[in-house]
Amino acid sequence: MKVMIHAAPKRMWYVDGFLVPSLREQGIEPDVYCDTKGLGNLGAFLDSVRDLRGDGTWHIQDDVIISSQFAELAEENDTGICKGFCHIPWEDDPLCSGVVYMPDLWHSFQCVRIPDDYARDFAAWIDGGNLPSPLDILARRGQHDDYLFSAWANEFHAGETVRNVKPNMVDHVDWLIGGSILSEWRGYAARSDLWEEEKLVDELREKLKRMNLPPV
Image (cartoon, rainbow, N blue to C red; front, side):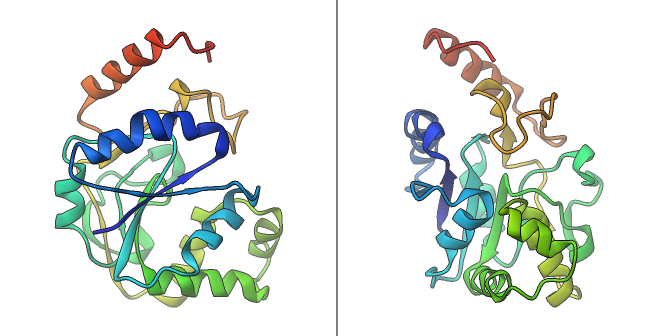
């Protein structure tokens, strides 16, 4: 089982100080891809997957907290495409958990498992530059890797079954560590709707308070 953290340079303090140690506590040594080249949301994801040659990789973002069951759930679901984060305002249906068809796959990249050959095929699709409108506009902007991946998956693998993992494997805590980098004007906390470990978030909040970080 492979896990890759996708990080912006300004979030490496959280990745190194909190996220990586929490994964190691569960026996996982993650790879960390930091966007030191300044490629941005989409470009950095594509750069991180072009050389992957294993069976599949769990991709998590630099603004999540992992469940105490993360390793267990990742092992149980370590096949095909899986999503481990559900957020209703992003058009995710929490009732669609377990094995579902591709159109019911949850959407965001907070926690996703992708077969490595699929990830390379997705990168090649974007690199080919023949996307229909308005997907071509998003690709040129270098944003919305998760939306573009959903479009690719539904175009080329629509009949396949995938998995939405309940309880969720991560929660989104960007609101505790400086706010969203990609959507700085979002104005609300985009939390998991299937997160069952609020105590972990409370504990993280207290640890961060003791660091005297600037208020967000």
